[in-house]
Length: 307
Image (cartoon, rainbow, N blue to C red; front, side, top):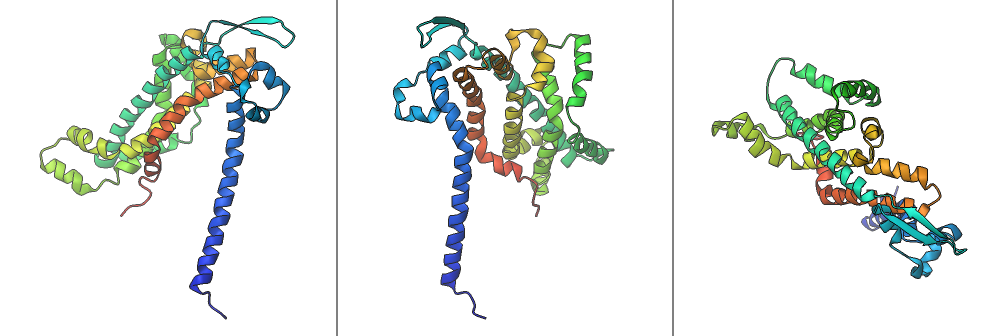
């Protein structure tokens, strides 16, 4: 039986790489094509969206306009003229206010669980106390518990103490729902830090708090950034928790997902406005992801291999 020569093996490897790259390019095209269509539609006027497909505008860029974003972001009235000459006055959607509300909700909902989970992960990894394994097992068990079963009990308690419809209430809710994953993820990373580094810090007279702040946190940046991406995107795109804990407070605390839901209800046929609102809601999550993506894979791989 003839053995494969290095030349034939190299040729086979090249063919395999070409096939893999072709499949990946095809998947990327299929994945991004709808997004491109939504993006192009967000810059088209009302009549063009109703008359023809978005791909036809690529040859006639003159019909592009930024008025859709102006109408979605601002809360003032706008007028437009239909093809038959009728002038219609429409109210803006004030997505800018909802955008700021989402930032107010999301940033504390990311920072608070990260800080608490980092302290907890350090304790589980490097402190010896009674019931440590049992408590950590309970935390792992909470990962499979759906948050939906806790919404109604928490809402009842919030109504009794006056937290419903407040930012503090939704901060605490997102913190509680994200702590289990954060603690587990950070524990996997912190537990892999060499013990010699910890012992050197203790020999120099550092306390646990000093070691945690000056040593553990800087070394855990990949894991912290990885969880920050997960938590930020989850909280930013959340609708269920926002509807439960903020629905009774009116538009003053309405987040982006709630405002998009109201736009869908009131402007179900206005695709040019819906697509513009969708892209407004995508800007910040995409910025956060691309800013922290270099830590993402390192954080996900944390603790997977020891030695």
